[in-house]
Image 1 (cartoon, rainbow, N blue to C red):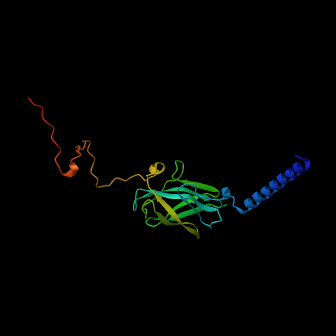
Image 2: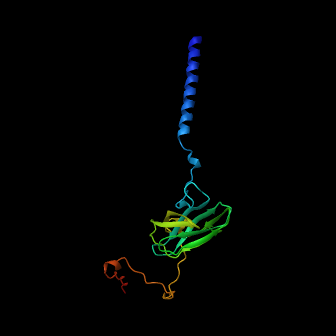
Length: 199
């Protein structure tokens, strides 16, 4: 190869690298930085009381775990207060009495964890797999949001179901074992009798 051909090839390589770098910078400037976006990393819903862009008073990853519609449900997630004053959060959800929690200035109160608060809604107004039209408020500021209802099907939520309260009319359990049923019982037939040994 001649010197001229080698120089031309080097110039083309440098020009191609410059165009590629410029293109990459233009594409990076046009796309959002997704790692800086706020999102809910689990099954719950996030809500900001003071508007979508204001993260000072917010609910993080909120959800309810309940055995069924009309049953009690435990609230999971967290409430964050990044202001300089203490705040009282109130959650209102259909079918349940409102619940209020105090969150200290600059603090976060975790719900449903071993070290957090246990908050139980007395009756959940939606079946598991559905959403409640909930309202989270602090003073005069409030925000509506969809509050998901889950049950204990997933192992991570099985221990979060509210403890069942015994019915006052329930009879005490007997320690006597229940009789076994044969597979023919569901057909309305009598089970086959074992043959007696011949003597």
